[in-house]
Image (cartoon, rainbow, N blue to C red; front, side, top):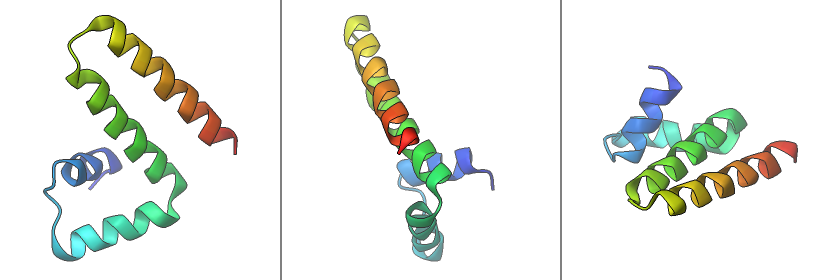
Length: 72
């Protein structure tokens, strides 16, 4: 299963048992997976807001946070 689908299942609460444990373990050790999960979670939050201004603001904050985390 690719990372995107796995992240979607995780964020939707569809992973259970060993699948959930394995994914959460991977999140702790795989920086790329953790970043992708963070971005996807934040994007979901951003898109759940209806106001375009707020969406734009949140996307800018997400981008800044990602760049900050990516440089460390």
